Image 1 (cartoon, rainbow, N blue to C red):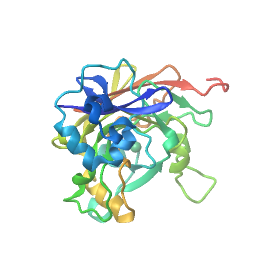
Image 2: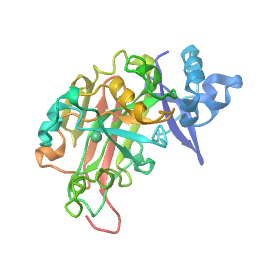
Image 3: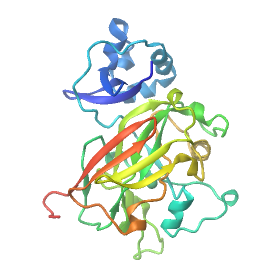
Image 4: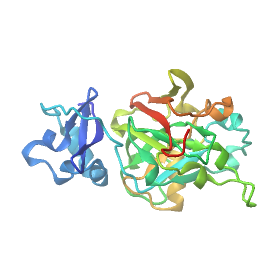
Length: 299
Ligand code: ZN
């Protein structure tokens, strides 16, 4: 059975859902009366037990007979989001970033806080501190198996699945003149709502090659980014190997793997209240998010 995994809100609880043909079903119900405890919890619980869960999920033959009429929320509440900067050559060019040869370099990773995460349909809020808020569609990798010093060859075995990330960025706040350090990725990337995530997680088994996926972002119906993950400088495997040379990767970690060319900075166009972004990745799904101004501060 071809499936994805989503999250939905049931009263105050986050519950995992199975997605079949874009329809959501409660994951616990799909397993019936002998549902394992992780299947009755959140998708974070499922990913935390991914070794066991992935096997059980592959053996499911039907999602059950009670489709849910709910909107999925952000699939995960990740403790850690790692994100690759300047990981597509044409995007580096449009940003005026001059890169060393790959053989003399390593990925440049930064982090986004869990408080940046929003789900499908939720609004990205433009803070009054920035006039240059921008979009970045990215392949999101969800880690499903703990590991330190993971080899490039073994890297994909540590992946539970893939999702869509929109790495919202305040361009005018990622550079600073009041300190000798030129860049401040923390303040440019970490406003509340700056990490739309979803609409769900597609298991690794459903994606033949994560380096052959088309990714696209439309702004108000007009295509801004349209590229392939084949354009990554450091591929998914190499990013996992690099990160795990620094720290232990753990189930639930997310890696935003970099964005291709076509961001607003290269076009002189930035997000404004009333805009709608539609981020799409082949084989995964569509993540739509409107844009609004922070309340009480005007637009
Ligand atoms: Zn990014």
